[in-house]
Every structure is written in structure tokens, then in C-alpha cells.
Length: 164
Picture 1 (tube, rainbow, N blue to C red):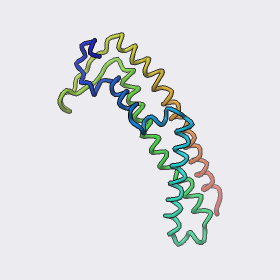
Picture 2: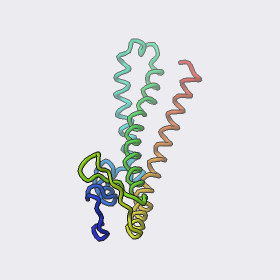
Picture 3: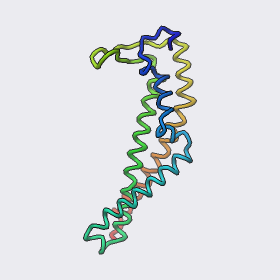
Picture 4: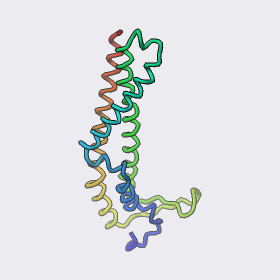
């Protein structure tokens, strides 16, 4: 960006934000759909056992064990769901900054917001980064979030229609 006489501080430039996010260990997980799915599955199983342990302390667990196991199974989806949402929000923010025609930035504090209009060459470069690097990650995250939501809705339907 320096070749464009950019007034935006380096840490607030969209390309640098993308590079910084790409270096983050957690934010690189969704780049591979299989690897990220496996990580979420392990996370889901771990939280399932924690939820079963918590619900086993209930007096009603002895009378309705299957209900509490299923409840733990479906409610343990909440943590992988929230984790995936956080990743989606981070990558979506970078995507919007890369594809935007303007860059909003702060020079020294919250009260001095400025706007810089990107030159055409920089806009094309960042749009290319957004479409080739960030968009597939967002697509993976949306697919995984859709699967989590469908499984959670199945759990809700099971509990609505059956009395255990």
C-alpha cells in the first residue's frame, strides 16, 4: 500500500489484516474443510462428555437417562456453533474490508475516524485476495454452520415430538 501513498496505519490496512489473520493458528483451521470438520467433531465430543457429566448430577438423570444423554448430545452443539460463528465473523470482516472501495481507519483514537478511497489497482488486488483466499473459507464455514444448525433442528424436533 505504500506505493499508493496510503495514509492508513499498517495494522489497519486490509491486506495486512488479512495476513495477520492468516497467521493466526485458530483462524487457519477453516481453510481445510476436512481438517476443520474433524477439529469441530473432536470439540463436540469433548463438550458432549462435559455436558453428560453435568447432567448426571441431576436427580432426574436416573429416571430419564436417555433423555439427558440426547439433551447433552444436542446441547453440546452450542460450543462448536459459537466457535464457528466467531471464525465466520472474523473472516467476513476481512472479506468486507478487502472488497470495500473505501478504508475506514483511526489515526490515534476512536474520535478521529478517517476514510481513504482505494486506488483502482489496489482495489483489484484486494478483490482478488478476497475472492481466491477468503471466499472459499467463508463458504466452508457456511456449510459447516448449516450442518450444525440442521443437526440442532433435528434435536429440537426429536424433543418436540417424542416424550421419553
